Image 1 (tube, rainbow, N blue to C red):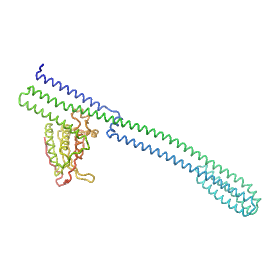
Image 2 (image 1 turned 180 degrees about the vertical axis):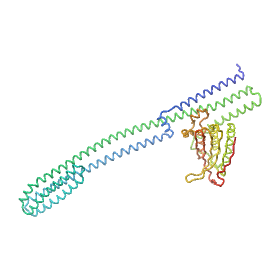
Image 3 (image 1 turned 120 degrees about the vertical axis):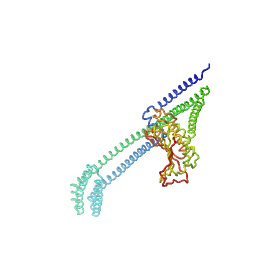
Image 4 (image 1 turned 30 degrees about the vertical axis):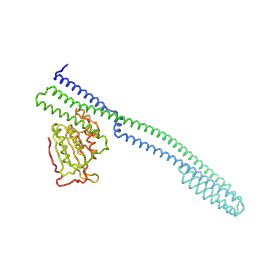
Length: 515
Protein backbone atom coordinates (compact mmCIF):
# COMPACT_ATOMS: atom_id res chain seq x y z
CA UNK A 1 0.00 0.00 0.00
CA UNK A 2 1.41 3.40 -0.97
CA UNK A 3 0.99 6.56 1.08
CA UNK A 4 1.25 10.09 -0.20
CA UNK A 5 4.05 12.35 1.15
CA UNK A 6 1.54 14.44 3.05
CA UNK A 7 0.13 11.31 4.69
CA UNK A 8 3.62 10.26 5.81
CA UNK A 9 4.25 13.73 7.24
CA UNK A 10 0.94 13.67 9.11
CA UNK A 11 1.63 10.16 10.40
CA UNK A 12 5.09 11.19 11.56
CA UNK A 13 3.69 14.27 13.28
CA UNK A 14 1.27 12.01 15.17
CA UNK A 15 4.10 9.69 16.22
CA UNK A 16 6.19 12.66 17.24
CA UNK A 17 3.33 14.09 19.33
CA UNK A 18 2.80 10.70 20.99
CA UNK A 19 6.50 10.37 21.79
CA UNK A 20 6.57 13.84 23.39
CA UNK A 21 3.51 12.97 25.49
CA UNK A 22 5.19 9.72 26.60
CA UNK A 23 8.37 11.56 27.52
CA UNK A 24 6.40 14.11 29.53
CA UNK A 25 4.63 11.30 31.37
CA UNK A 26 7.94 9.68 32.25
CA UNK A 27 9.36 12.97 33.48
CA UNK A 28 6.20 13.74 35.48
CA UNK A 29 6.21 10.34 37.19
CA UNK A 30 9.90 10.61 37.96
CA UNK A 31 9.50 14.13 39.32
CA UNK A 32 6.49 13.08 41.39
CA UNK A 33 8.44 10.21 42.96
CA UNK A 34 11.60 12.22 43.52
CA UNK A 35 9.84 15.19 45.11
CA UNK A 36 7.26 13.28 47.17
CA UNK A 37 7.43 14.50 50.78
CA UNK A 38 9.61 12.22 52.89
CA UNK A 39 9.29 11.60 56.63
CA UNK A 40 11.53 13.67 58.90
CA UNK A 41 13.77 10.68 59.73
CA UNK A 42 14.25 9.88 56.04
CA UNK A 43 15.09 13.50 55.27
CA UNK A 44 17.68 13.53 58.04
CA UNK A 45 19.14 10.23 56.90
CA UNK A 46 19.13 11.43 53.33
CA UNK A 47 21.15 14.46 54.34
CA UNK A 48 23.53 12.26 56.36
CA UNK A 49 24.02 9.86 53.45
CA UNK A 50 25.74 12.63 51.48
CA UNK A 51 28.53 12.45 54.03
CA UNK A 52 28.93 8.69 53.51
CA UNK A 53 27.60 7.93 57.03
CA UNK A 54 30.71 9.46 58.62
CA UNK A 55 28.49 11.65 60.78
CA UNK A 56 26.59 8.64 62.13
CA UNK A 57 29.80 6.79 62.92
CA UNK A 58 31.12 9.89 64.67
CA UNK A 59 27.96 10.05 66.80
CA UNK A 60 28.33 6.38 67.74
CA UNK A 61 31.99 6.87 68.67
CA UNK A 62 31.10 9.89 70.80
CA UNK A 63 28.32 7.93 72.51
CA UNK A 64 30.58 4.97 73.25
CA UNK A 65 33.29 7.34 74.55
CA UNK A 66 30.86 9.09 76.88
CA UNK A 67 29.47 5.76 78.07
CA UNK A 68 32.97 4.41 78.69
CA UNK A 69 33.86 7.56 80.65
CA UNK A 70 30.74 7.15 82.82
CA UNK A 71 31.54 3.49 83.50
CA UNK A 72 35.14 4.30 84.41
CA UNK A 73 33.99 7.16 86.66
CA UNK A 74 31.52 4.90 88.51
CA UNK A 75 34.16 2.22 88.97
CA UNK A 76 36.65 4.75 90.29
CA UNK A 77 34.07 6.22 92.68
CA UNK A 78 33.13 2.77 94.00
CA UNK A 79 36.80 1.88 94.44
CA UNK A 80 37.53 5.17 96.22
CA UNK A 81 34.52 4.73 98.49
CA UNK A 82 35.53 1.17 99.37
CA UNK A 83 39.09 2.25 100.14
CA UNK A 84 37.86 5.16 102.28
CA UNK A 85 35.49 2.89 104.20
CA UNK A 86 38.17 0.25 104.75
CA UNK A 87 40.67 2.87 105.92
CA UNK A 88 38.10 4.49 108.20
CA UNK A 89 37.08 1.13 109.67
CA UNK A 90 40.62 -0.02 110.34
CA UNK A 91 41.76 3.31 111.80
CA UNK A 92 38.62 3.64 113.91
CA UNK A 93 38.95 0.18 115.37
CA UNK A 94 42.62 0.79 116.09
CA UNK A 95 41.97 4.15 117.82
CA UNK A 96 39.10 2.80 119.93
CA UNK A 97 41.17 -0.25 120.93
CA UNK A 98 44.13 1.95 121.90
CA UNK A 99 41.88 4.29 123.88
CA UNK A 100 40.30 1.40 125.79
CA UNK A 101 43.70 -0.17 126.40
CA UNK A 102 45.21 3.07 127.72
CA UNK A 103 42.21 3.63 130.00
CA UNK A 104 42.54 0.09 131.35
CA UNK A 105 46.31 0.64 131.73
CA UNK A 106 45.65 3.76 133.82
CA UNK A 107 43.29 1.83 136.08
CA UNK A 108 45.51 -1.24 136.25
CA UNK A 109 48.70 0.62 137.29
CA UNK A 110 46.71 2.46 139.97
CA UNK A 111 45.56 -0.87 141.40
CA UNK A 112 49.14 -2.14 141.28
CA UNK A 113 50.24 0.85 143.32
CA UNK A 114 47.51 0.06 145.90
CA UNK A 115 48.53 -3.57 146.29
CA UNK A 116 52.29 -3.18 146.76
CA UNK A 117 54.22 -1.99 149.82
CA UNK A 118 57.43 -1.29 147.91
CA UNK A 119 57.82 2.47 147.73
CA UNK A 120 59.97 2.29 144.63
CA UNK A 121 57.33 0.25 142.82
CA UNK A 122 54.63 2.66 143.99
CA UNK A 123 56.50 5.59 142.42
CA UNK A 124 57.04 3.58 139.19
CA UNK A 125 53.36 2.64 138.99
CA UNK A 126 52.35 6.26 139.61
CA UNK A 127 54.53 7.36 136.67
CA UNK A 128 53.05 4.62 134.43
CA UNK A 129 49.46 5.58 135.24
CA UNK A 130 50.20 9.26 134.48
CA UNK A 131 51.79 8.29 131.12
CA UNK A 132 48.73 6.19 130.21
CA UNK A 133 46.52 9.11 131.30
CA UNK A 134 48.33 11.41 128.84
CA UNK A 135 47.59 9.01 125.98
CA UNK A 136 43.94 8.73 127.01
CA UNK A 137 43.58 12.52 127.04
CA UNK A 138 45.09 12.72 123.56
CA UNK A 139 42.74 9.99 122.33
CA UNK A 140 39.68 11.73 123.78
CA UNK A 141 40.74 15.04 122.19
CA UNK A 142 41.24 13.34 118.79
CA UNK A 143 37.82 11.69 119.06
CA UNK A 144 36.27 15.10 119.80
CA UNK A 145 37.93 16.61 116.72
CA UNK A 146 36.65 13.78 114.49
CA UNK A 147 33.12 13.84 115.89
CA UNK A 148 30.57 14.52 113.13
CA UNK A 149 27.12 14.69 114.70
CA UNK A 150 25.72 16.32 117.78
CA UNK A 151 25.45 12.93 119.51
CA UNK A 152 29.13 12.22 119.02
CA UNK A 153 30.11 15.73 120.19
CA UNK A 154 27.98 15.33 123.35
CA UNK A 155 29.51 11.91 124.02
CA UNK A 156 33.03 13.32 123.58
CA UNK A 157 32.27 16.09 126.13
CA UNK A 158 30.78 13.57 128.61
CA UNK A 159 33.73 11.21 128.20
CA UNK A 160 36.11 14.09 128.86
CA UNK A 161 34.19 15.10 132.00
CA UNK A 162 33.95 11.55 133.34
CA UNK A 163 37.65 10.95 132.69
CA UNK A 164 38.56 14.20 134.42
CA UNK A 165 36.39 13.17 137.41
CA UNK A 166 38.10 9.81 137.59
CA UNK A 167 41.56 11.41 137.40
CA UNK A 168 40.79 13.70 140.34
CA UNK A 169 39.98 10.64 142.48
CA UNK A 170 43.01 8.80 141.14
CA UNK A 171 45.34 11.69 141.96
CA UNK A 172 44.10 11.69 145.58
CA UNK A 173 44.63 7.93 145.75
CA UNK A 174 48.18 8.25 144.42
CA UNK A 175 48.94 11.09 146.87
CA UNK A 176 47.76 8.94 149.81
CA UNK A 177 49.82 6.00 148.57
CA UNK A 178 52.98 8.06 148.25
CA UNK A 179 52.39 9.49 151.78
CA UNK A 180 52.15 5.92 153.14
CA UNK A 181 48.43 6.01 153.89
CA UNK A 182 47.52 2.86 152.00
CA UNK A 183 44.26 2.23 153.87
CA UNK A 184 43.06 5.78 153.21
CA UNK A 185 43.96 5.36 149.50
CA UNK A 186 41.96 2.13 149.32
CA UNK A 187 38.96 3.78 150.92
CA UNK A 188 39.17 6.74 148.51
CA UNK A 189 39.35 4.41 145.51
CA UNK A 190 36.42 2.32 146.67
CA UNK A 191 34.36 5.39 147.47
CA UNK A 192 34.87 7.33 144.23
CA UNK A 193 37.39 5.72 141.90
CA UNK A 194 35.46 2.55 141.07
CA UNK A 195 32.22 4.35 140.16
CA UNK A 196 34.06 7.07 138.22
CA UNK A 197 35.97 4.53 136.14
CA UNK A 198 32.77 2.58 135.53
CA UNK A 199 31.24 5.69 133.97
CA UNK A 200 34.34 6.06 131.79
CA UNK A 201 34.03 2.43 130.70
CA UNK A 202 30.39 2.94 129.79
CA UNK A 203 31.28 6.02 127.81
CA UNK A 204 33.91 4.05 125.86
CA UNK A 205 31.38 1.33 125.11
CA UNK A 206 28.98 4.02 123.87
CA UNK A 207 31.73 5.33 121.59
CA UNK A 208 32.23 1.83 120.24
CA UNK A 209 28.48 1.45 119.67
CA UNK A 210 28.23 4.73 117.75
CA UNK A 211 31.21 3.79 115.66
CA UNK A 212 29.59 0.44 114.83
CA UNK A 213 26.38 2.18 113.78
CA UNK A 214 28.32 4.62 111.62
CA UNK A 215 30.22 1.75 109.99
CA UNK A 216 26.92 -0.05 109.33
CA UNK A 217 25.48 3.06 107.67
CA UNK A 218 28.56 3.43 105.49
CA UNK A 219 28.38 -0.25 104.58
CA UNK A 220 24.72 0.11 103.61
CA UNK A 221 25.57 3.24 101.60
CA UNK A 222 28.36 1.40 99.82
CA UNK A 223 26.03 -1.51 99.07
CA UNK A 224 23.43 0.92 97.68
CA UNK A 225 26.10 2.63 95.62
CA UNK A 226 27.22 -0.74 94.30
CA UNK A 227 23.66 -1.66 93.34
CA UNK A 228 23.20 1.74 91.73
CA UNK A 229 26.45 1.30 89.78
CA UNK A 230 25.35 -2.17 88.67
CA UNK A 231 21.99 -0.84 87.51
CA UNK A 232 23.72 2.02 85.74
CA UNK A 233 26.13 -0.40 84.13
CA UNK A 234 23.25 -2.53 82.85
CA UNK A 235 21.50 0.61 81.58
CA UNK A 236 24.66 1.87 79.91
CA UNK A 237 25.31 -1.45 78.21
CA UNK A 238 21.69 -1.59 77.08
CA UNK A 239 21.93 1.96 75.78
CA UNK A 240 25.17 1.13 73.98
CA UNK A 241 23.54 -1.88 72.36
CA UNK A 242 20.49 0.14 71.30
CA UNK A 243 22.69 2.99 70.05
CA UNK A 244 24.84 0.60 68.03
CA UNK A 245 21.75 -1.10 66.62
CA UNK A 246 20.20 2.26 65.74
CA UNK A 247 23.46 3.40 64.16
CA UNK A 248 23.72 0.28 62.02
CA UNK A 249 20.08 0.69 60.96
CA UNK A 250 20.60 4.39 60.26
CA UNK A 251 23.70 3.74 58.18
CA UNK A 252 21.96 1.06 56.15
CA UNK A 253 18.89 3.27 55.81
CA UNK A 254 20.97 6.27 54.73
CA UNK A 255 22.77 4.16 52.14
CA UNK A 256 19.43 2.89 50.87
CA UNK A 257 18.08 6.44 50.70
CA UNK A 258 21.22 7.52 48.85
CA UNK A 259 20.76 4.75 46.31
CA UNK A 260 17.08 5.61 45.92
CA UNK A 261 17.90 9.29 45.41
CA UNK A 262 20.57 8.41 42.87
CA UNK A 263 18.13 6.08 41.09
CA UNK A 264 15.49 8.84 40.98
CA UNK A 265 18.02 11.34 39.68
CA UNK A 266 19.20 8.89 37.06
CA UNK A 267 15.60 8.27 35.99
CA UNK A 268 15.12 12.03 35.67
CA UNK A 269 18.34 12.20 33.69
CA UNK A 270 17.25 9.40 31.35
CA UNK A 271 13.88 11.08 30.83
CA UNK A 272 15.54 14.46 30.21
CA UNK A 273 18.15 13.05 27.83
CA UNK A 274 15.49 11.04 26.02
CA UNK A 275 13.47 14.18 25.53
CA UNK A 276 16.51 16.26 24.54
CA UNK A 277 17.54 13.64 21.97
CA UNK A 278 14.09 12.68 20.76
CA UNK A 279 13.04 16.24 19.90
CA UNK A 280 15.94 17.04 17.51
CA UNK A 281 15.80 13.51 16.07
CA UNK A 282 12.13 13.95 15.30
CA UNK A 283 12.75 17.36 13.72
CA UNK A 284 15.66 15.98 11.67
CA UNK A 285 13.64 12.98 10.54
CA UNK A 286 10.66 15.17 9.65
CA UNK A 287 12.86 17.59 7.68
CA UNK A 288 14.64 14.72 5.92
CA UNK A 289 11.33 13.07 5.00
CA UNK A 290 10.01 16.34 3.57
CA UNK A 291 13.20 16.82 1.50
CA UNK A 292 13.20 13.18 0.36
CA UNK A 293 9.51 13.33 -0.58
CA UNK A 294 10.08 16.40 -2.74
CA UNK A 295 8.02 18.73 -0.60
CA UNK A 296 10.87 21.29 -0.62
CA UNK A 297 10.53 23.01 -3.99
CA UNK A 298 12.68 26.14 -3.90
CA UNK A 299 16.16 27.12 -2.73
CA UNK A 300 14.94 29.31 0.14
CA UNK A 301 13.01 26.44 1.68
CA UNK A 302 15.99 24.13 1.15
CA UNK A 303 18.28 26.59 2.94
CA UNK A 304 15.80 26.90 5.76
CA UNK A 305 15.57 23.12 6.14
CA UNK A 306 19.37 22.90 5.99
CA UNK A 307 19.68 25.43 8.79
CA UNK A 308 17.19 23.41 10.86
CA UNK A 309 19.17 20.21 10.26
CA UNK A 310 22.43 21.96 11.10
CA UNK A 311 21.06 23.47 14.31
CA UNK A 312 19.43 20.28 15.56
CA UNK A 313 22.44 18.11 14.71
CA UNK A 314 24.70 20.58 16.51
CA UNK A 315 22.43 20.45 19.58
CA UNK A 316 22.54 16.64 19.57
CA UNK A 317 26.31 16.64 19.16
CA UNK A 318 26.79 19.05 22.04
CA UNK A 319 24.53 16.97 24.27
CA UNK A 320 26.37 13.74 23.45
CA UNK A 321 29.74 15.45 23.91
CA UNK A 322 28.66 16.77 27.28
CA UNK A 323 27.54 13.33 28.47
CA UNK A 324 30.76 11.71 27.29
CA UNK A 325 32.85 14.44 28.88
CA UNK A 326 30.98 14.05 32.16
CA UNK A 327 31.67 10.31 32.12
CA UNK A 328 35.36 10.92 31.37
CA UNK A 329 35.66 13.21 34.44
CA UNK A 330 34.24 10.60 36.81
CA UNK A 331 37.73 9.92 38.16
CA UNK A 332 38.24 12.87 40.51
CA UNK A 333 41.93 12.03 41.05
CA UNK A 334 42.72 12.34 37.36
CA UNK A 335 44.52 15.58 36.57
CA UNK A 336 44.77 17.26 33.21
CA UNK A 337 47.90 18.76 31.71
CA UNK A 338 48.15 22.38 32.87
CA UNK A 339 49.93 25.17 31.05
CA UNK A 340 50.11 28.97 31.26
CA UNK A 341 47.24 30.57 29.33
CA UNK A 342 46.75 34.26 28.58
CA UNK A 343 43.35 35.54 29.68
CA UNK A 344 42.78 37.14 26.27
CA UNK A 345 43.02 33.74 24.60
CA UNK A 346 40.55 32.22 27.05
CA UNK A 347 38.06 35.05 26.56
CA UNK A 348 38.41 34.88 22.77
CA UNK A 349 37.71 31.13 22.77
CA UNK A 350 34.65 31.53 24.99
CA UNK A 351 33.24 34.33 22.84
CA UNK A 352 33.82 32.29 19.69
CA UNK A 353 32.15 29.17 21.11
CA UNK A 354 29.12 30.99 22.54
CA UNK A 355 28.55 33.60 19.83
CA UNK A 356 25.84 31.70 17.97
CA UNK A 357 24.16 30.61 21.22
CA UNK A 358 24.00 34.16 22.56
CA UNK A 359 22.89 35.64 19.23
CA UNK A 360 20.21 33.04 18.50
CA UNK A 361 18.79 33.40 22.00
CA UNK A 362 18.50 37.18 21.70
CA UNK A 363 20.93 37.86 24.55
CA UNK A 364 23.64 40.49 24.92
CA UNK A 365 27.02 39.45 26.33
CA UNK A 366 28.95 42.26 28.06
CA UNK A 367 32.67 41.76 28.64
CA UNK A 368 34.84 43.30 31.36
CA UNK A 369 38.54 42.35 31.51
CA UNK A 370 41.04 43.96 33.85
CA UNK A 371 44.22 45.11 32.07
CA UNK A 372 47.58 43.48 32.70
CA UNK A 373 46.27 40.18 34.03
CA UNK A 374 48.83 37.41 34.57
CA UNK A 375 48.54 34.06 32.82
CA UNK A 376 46.21 31.49 34.29
CA UNK A 377 47.36 27.93 34.92
CA UNK A 378 44.96 25.47 33.33
CA UNK A 379 43.77 23.53 30.31
CA UNK A 380 42.32 25.67 27.51
CA UNK A 381 39.75 23.06 26.45
CA UNK A 382 38.60 22.47 30.03
CA UNK A 383 38.35 26.18 30.87
CA UNK A 384 36.46 26.90 27.65
CA UNK A 385 34.03 24.02 28.26
CA UNK A 386 33.48 25.15 31.83
CA UNK A 387 32.75 28.76 30.84
CA UNK A 388 30.62 27.64 27.88
CA UNK A 389 28.46 25.66 30.30
CA UNK A 390 28.15 28.70 32.57
CA UNK A 391 27.17 30.95 29.66
CA UNK A 392 24.66 28.35 28.45
CA UNK A 393 23.27 28.15 31.97
CA UNK A 394 22.93 31.95 32.05
CA UNK A 395 21.10 31.91 28.72
CA UNK A 396 18.76 29.16 29.91
CA UNK A 397 17.86 30.87 33.20
CA UNK A 398 18.58 34.48 32.18
CA UNK A 399 15.05 35.76 32.37
CA UNK A 400 13.53 38.68 30.44
CA UNK A 401 16.51 41.04 30.92
CA UNK A 402 18.60 38.99 28.44
CA UNK A 403 21.94 40.43 29.48
CA UNK A 404 24.97 38.42 30.55
CA UNK A 405 28.19 39.80 32.01
CA UNK A 406 31.49 37.96 31.55
CA UNK A 407 34.10 39.46 33.88
CA UNK A 408 37.79 38.51 34.23
CA UNK A 409 39.97 39.79 37.06
CA UNK A 410 42.51 38.78 39.66
CA UNK A 411 42.93 38.93 43.40
CA UNK A 412 46.22 40.00 44.94
CA UNK A 413 48.05 37.52 47.22
CA UNK A 414 47.25 37.80 50.90
CA UNK A 415 48.77 36.42 54.06
CA UNK A 416 46.67 33.26 54.12
CA UNK A 417 45.84 32.84 50.42
CA UNK A 418 47.76 33.12 47.15
CA UNK A 419 46.48 35.24 44.32
CA UNK A 420 44.14 33.76 41.75
CA UNK A 421 42.42 34.45 38.45
CA UNK A 422 38.65 34.90 38.68
CA UNK A 423 36.39 34.58 35.64
CA UNK A 424 32.72 35.09 36.43
CA UNK A 425 29.47 34.82 34.49
CA UNK A 426 26.57 36.92 35.78
CA UNK A 427 22.95 36.81 34.69
CA UNK A 428 19.83 38.69 35.79
CA UNK A 429 17.49 35.74 35.75
CA UNK A 430 15.37 33.74 38.14
CA UNK A 431 18.15 33.15 40.69
CA UNK A 432 18.60 30.18 43.02
CA UNK A 433 16.86 29.48 46.29
CA UNK A 434 19.34 29.38 49.23
CA UNK A 435 18.17 25.88 50.17
CA UNK A 436 19.11 24.60 46.71
CA UNK A 437 22.62 26.06 46.43
CA UNK A 438 24.11 23.06 48.24
CA UNK A 439 22.66 20.72 45.57
CA UNK A 440 23.07 22.55 42.28
CA UNK A 441 26.49 21.00 41.64
CA UNK A 442 25.20 17.45 42.26
CA UNK A 443 25.00 15.34 39.08
CA UNK A 444 21.48 15.05 37.60
CA UNK A 445 20.01 17.53 40.11
CA UNK A 446 17.36 19.90 38.80
CA UNK A 447 15.37 22.31 40.94
CA UNK A 448 11.64 21.74 41.39
CA UNK A 449 11.11 25.37 40.26
CA UNK A 450 12.95 24.57 37.03
CA UNK A 451 10.73 21.53 36.50
CA UNK A 452 7.67 23.65 37.12
CA UNK A 453 8.90 26.25 34.60
CA UNK A 454 9.28 23.56 31.90
CA UNK A 455 12.94 24.51 31.34
CA UNK A 456 14.63 21.54 29.70
CA UNK A 457 18.03 20.23 30.72
CA UNK A 458 19.99 17.20 31.88
CA UNK A 459 21.33 18.40 35.23
CA UNK A 460 24.93 17.84 34.11
CA UNK A 461 26.08 21.32 33.10
CA UNK A 462 27.06 22.69 36.51
CA UNK A 463 28.31 19.33 37.78
CA UNK A 464 30.58 19.04 34.73
CA UNK A 465 31.79 22.64 35.14
CA UNK A 466 32.68 22.01 38.78
CA UNK A 467 34.54 18.81 37.94
CA UNK A 468 36.50 20.54 35.20
CA UNK A 469 37.45 23.37 37.56
CA UNK A 470 38.61 20.99 40.27
CA UNK A 471 40.58 18.86 37.79
CA UNK A 472 42.69 21.95 37.05
CA UNK A 473 43.31 22.68 40.73
CA UNK A 474 40.68 25.42 40.78
CA UNK A 475 37.16 25.78 42.10
CA UNK A 476 33.70 27.01 41.13
CA UNK A 477 31.59 29.17 43.44
CA UNK A 478 28.17 30.80 43.17
CA UNK A 479 26.39 33.83 44.58
CA UNK A 480 22.68 34.07 43.87
CA UNK A 481 19.50 35.82 44.91
CA UNK A 482 15.98 34.87 43.96
CA UNK A 483 14.55 36.93 41.10
CA UNK A 484 17.78 38.97 40.89
CA UNK A 485 20.17 36.62 39.13
CA UNK A 486 23.26 34.54 39.78
CA UNK A 487 27.02 34.90 39.51
CA UNK A 488 29.16 31.81 38.92
CA UNK A 489 32.91 32.38 39.40
CA UNK A 490 35.68 30.15 38.10
CA UNK A 491 38.79 30.38 40.33
CA UNK A 492 42.07 29.46 38.62
CA UNK A 493 45.67 29.37 39.77
CA UNK A 494 48.12 31.97 38.57
CA UNK A 495 50.98 30.62 36.49
CA UNK A 496 54.27 30.58 38.39
CA UNK A 497 56.54 33.45 37.46
CA UNK A 498 53.62 35.78 36.72
CA UNK A 499 52.90 38.52 39.20
CA UNK A 500 49.80 40.62 39.56
CA UNK A 501 50.70 44.17 38.64
CA UNK A 502 48.90 46.74 40.75
CA UNK A 503 49.21 49.91 38.70
CA UNK A 504 47.57 53.27 38.53
CA UNK A 505 45.32 51.90 35.81
CA UNK A 506 43.79 49.40 38.21
CA UNK A 507 40.04 49.65 38.14
CA UNK A 508 39.94 50.56 34.45
CA UNK A 509 38.55 47.65 32.47
CA UNK A 510 38.25 46.94 28.83
CA UNK A 511 34.61 46.70 27.88
CA UNK A 512 32.87 45.29 24.88
CA UNK A 513 29.39 44.06 24.10
CA UNK A 514 28.44 41.05 22.01
CA UNK A 515 24.86 40.95 20.76
